[in-house]
Every structure is written in structure tokens, then in C-alpha cells.
Image 1: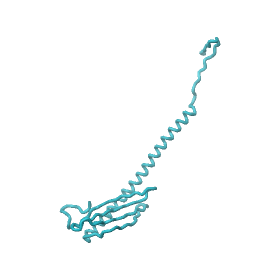
Image 2: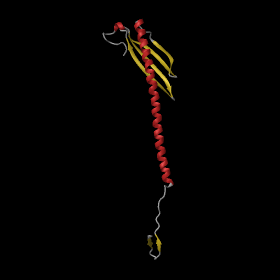
Image 3: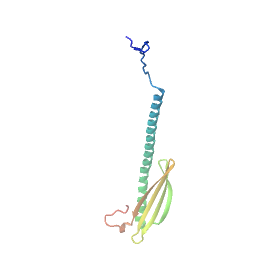
Image 4: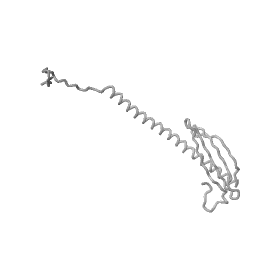
Length: 152
């Protein structure tokens, strides 16, 4: 049985149903645009996390070297009972990457022989220069209070 419609003029015509088969071009373009923005956001987050991982990997790797250098300076103070004020610098290779370092020694108190040691480590990470600074305060062992460490 076919549905019919009747016009006011008396003409009887079969009722035509239009079925929508598929998507329009605008719907496809909008879907593509939304998916593209989502994929770009996911890749951007991925690249930021990879960059952050690389930074912290290098940072943690260098901290052992920094600690060793501070211990060497402390050993030098224990052996010589004094440190030479001034600044020294150099470059170290760690894991196929060069790091620039600067060690600055200042005597803060002549009577107590309190020294401030600043160790600055910097490296190039992509197009930016990363810098970390570690400060330690050292005194000769005979001037330390009982049970106190020499490095802070």
C-alpha cells in the first residue's frame, strides 16, 4: 500500500519519502577538523612530556657529578685547612653531552674560616640554555660543633 497525498487542486500524488543515506560534506569536514585538533593536542602533550623527561634525566645525571665535586672541595679543605678564593671553570662530558661548570669559592668569615662554594652547571637543551646552581657552606673539621656535618 502506497501512501498518497491529495492537493487542494484534486491531484493525487504518491508520497515520496526522502531517506538520508550517508553524511554531507560539511559534516565530514567538521569531523575531520575536530579529529585533527584532537590529534594535534595529543602530539603536543607527547612532545612536551618527552622534552621534560630529557631535562630531568640530564638534571638527575649531573647531580651525582655535582655532589662529587662538592665532596672533593670538602676533602681539599680538610687536607689544607683552607681554600683559595676565586673562580674556576671547565667543561665535562656526561652521556654524550657537554656541560659547562663554574666553581666560585668565597670566604665569608675570616675568624671561623667559613667558606661559601657555589657550583653552577649549565648546558644547552634544544634552543634554550639550562642552568642549575648548588651552594654549600664549608668549615674546617676542627671548627665544627660536635656531631655537625661540614657541608649543608
